[in-house]
Length: 92
Image (cartoon, rainbow, N blue to C red; front, side, top):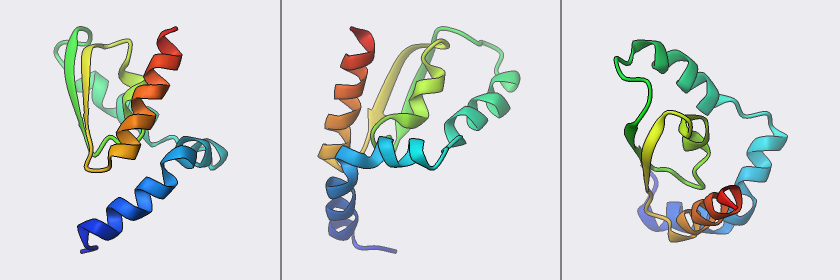
């Protein structure tokens, strides 16, 4: 297990570039999760979703059409700041 301080330092430094790096590497994990999970849900819209370890919020993006509310939780404040900035940019 990595020490918490090490995790925080690493992801704090990576936060401004994290979404860009994932896009460049064709990261499709969040879309696959939605694809595999949605058929098993009885309610498919109006969901209240909690994204634990949300980072910059990439895993929440595919759920926007289904969610009434998405709450992101992360130990790295810089990652949360990036997630909020991305949400604001997409809401405008």
